[in-house]
Amino acid sequence: MAAKGPLKLKVKGGKGSKGSSSSSSSSSSSKYQMLKDWTNWSLKKAKVATQYGFIPLIIIIGMNSDPKPDLFHLLTPV
Image 1 (cartoon, rainbow, N blue to C red):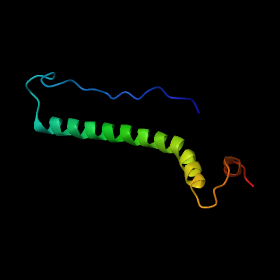
Image 2: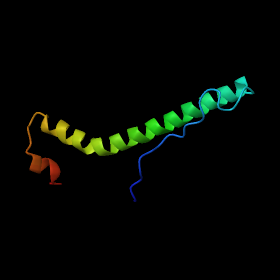
Image 3: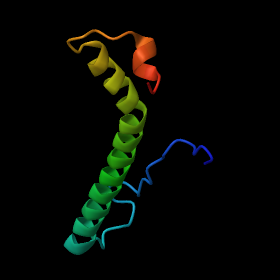
């Protein structure tokens, strides 16, 4: 799997960039689109954090268990 570049949000024009003919429906649809983009971006970041943090979390939990195993015993399938 190839690595992807950093995620960049698409920024729409600011206030007044479309002129004075903006309606409330376009405003609500742009808010919906911004919410949708932000949600997708945050879920992608959470997915990456979960993927890279799951195994270290399991190792930390295993090291703090009651019969204190060595790191070698946690990493080998014995």
